[in-house]
Amino acid sequence: MINISDDCQSLGHCALRFLLCLFLIGPSLGLYGQSTLRGQILDDATNEPLIGATVQWENVAVISDDQGAFSIVFQNDTSAIVIQYLSYQTQNLYASSLDTFVQIRMLRSENLLEAITVSSGKYERSLAESTASIEVLKANLLESNNTTAVDEILDKVPGVNIIDGQANIRGGSGYSYGAGSRVMLLLDDIPALQVDAGFPNWEDYPVESIEQIEVLKGSASAIYGSAAINGIINLRTAYAKSEPQTKAALFYTHFMNPSDLDKKWWSRAPYQYGASFSDARKIGKLDLVTGGYYTKLESFRQDDFQHYGRINLNARYRFSARTIAGVALNFNRGSGRNMFYWKDAEEGAYIGTDDNINISERTRYTLDPFFTYSSADGSTKHQVKSRIYSIANDQNAGRSNHSTSYYGEYQFLKQFSKEGAVLTAGLVGSTTSVDADLYSDTILLATNWALYAQASKKFWDRLTIDAGVRFESNFIDGPNIINGEMVPDDAIR
Image (cartoon, rainbow, N blue to C red; front, side, top):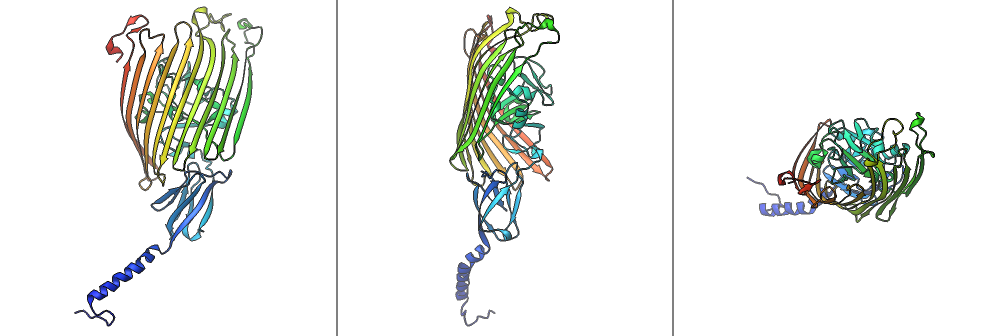
């Protein structure tokens, strides 16, 4: 039996009044204690807005815009709002202590393990979280060593040797001049080896604009291909900060007499001089970095010389904190003369024989358009990177070669913050044409494309496991005659 009060004479009438109360009161109950936090995130030392910083409350996350500003809705309870930015110390804010607008000043982490790298997974993560052995060289190390070419500083890295201009990591590839060393060289995450020989042109890479160098000592073939089976060297150029930065340098090298004066062939001491500059500044939403370098070397080896200069430009425009597009350019022009071996170990120690002299003039450039789009919370990223790499090496004795390479890559990144996992996947394609005196009857054509995926999962804040897979296809249409000898079709395809 059901007793009904005077105010509710029927069951249906009572139910109607109850639903009406829920309709009127329910939303206010759901909104009770809900607040909106607005603020700006800045670098504590430079006052620079931190773009793309993550602000998270439980499962709700947003990223700061191009002014470092953000807005997030949260519930007034004891859960912390967490502010994170790579290479900065994490901050926690609690609802009970928040105003409607806050200015958050982030402190840089001084721990080397917090250095940010991209080489091991094609996304930014701290050095401590990388499962590979990585050496990180900062720009101040290059400056303090008066480094004029990248190979000069790499030769000082433990486990790395530069042999006849080719990088070798932990002896993994042995020695094979002109055939590549299975160490992938990247410039801003894009392959930068001379395509016809897998050879690094160290003079092309803009030392004056490099922010850091990452050396991965181990295989990374799942996401970079078989050319990275012995490691990676990634040169990452700088971007503009909140305050304009302009640097310039002059240098001079004087070669002293050898201890054995019988080996001295010169009447005037050999020398080298040069100059470099770089400028990085923000112009509205445009980040612009420019640089230049010139050197003249008159070597202690008789008649050897190197005269060359380069210019570089990197422009990045922020349509918003989520959408970025830009282009990078690196141009190198020069000439030189060198020898392969000396006449003898005595008076001819620094003098080359006439039949092994190489004289060259070169023009090389790279042009790199790129585009990035991120989701509102920064957990998903779509990135398109591309490069046009043109090489014109004009040399004596039938050694000239001209090549053009086109490279394109689409990369998808998804971060699962709650699960502590990251998925990286992508599609890569490249095509190359090589016209060289070595190939007497045709132009060498090469095509490569690949699909890759790599997942990274963190367990118990101590263990990180990476697993990757790659499918790759290569096709080479080579010449029928090399050095006057017929080559079978199955040897070139």
